[in-house]
Length: 401
Figure (cartoon, rainbow, N blue to C red):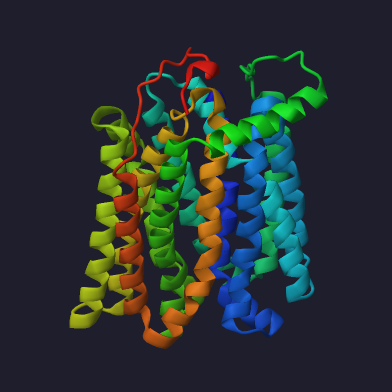
């Protein structure tokens, strides 16, 4: 169990970096003297390489070593995070964020695969605890970044984050005791490299993986669009940077309290059932915010907090079920499946800045309606997904595509 908590700490850095940038879009416009759209591309230039590199990070971990793939990726992520802080221009910021995204791709898929191997009977509960730490990162990221921007600088935030990433990777080298379970350990480097591409082809050609990955990507976009634009919406309505970051922080806090219970519910009621439940709760939250803004009963800030509390609850149930499913579709290729699903999910995240014209031209409520449409589409796509009960010791060659 202690080794799992080392992984939980390691998984904090991606959510911290991602949620912090959401709150720092406005400060980027001021620091680099660019418009909102250009500043928001700091999200895109991170998520595109993050997603594309995941096509290979999972297969590499499955073919070589999950432990050292994770350690190397985390150390380089920490180093490039410091380079982000030192960026003198928006162009350099984009380049360093791009490289940061590449190395960030070697964390979450590998951690998901290791946890999937470590917890056969209570896998859902383990992923629920993983969601606790992911949501902790989401919760403290906007708040800490907002505080740094208000009292110090956003650059100091990235320096601190990078140093902690490097220290955590060093800790994993000496404290993380993990026995690799991959087959054919004696294969040469060339054979393992070829197997990496074979693993990737097998996953991409699996119909059930495609259904799962596309459906969760679309639902993810529908939920995360709210995370991205609610802070900007509050700032544009006169709220201070630190105050405007509180609703997103509250969403993360909800995940902290409900992460473990969401995982247990996945084990008890089923992966698909909980996935549907989370998506329906997200739809309820976004429609509720539209109604609260239209009838103008509550203050804008209070309405936003209510929305993000419910969205945070939905997200933690969706994450626990989706992460569990990713390790069970093809059990011997946990990291590869998790990587591919992550590719589509974060490429979808990269598209979110391009929704800014909806916000700028038609308003926040129209953007919420668009988000609801996306989540409903994700639900419809995931209905035909078939989940199989596959024993942990089943050979890869016995699993039909």
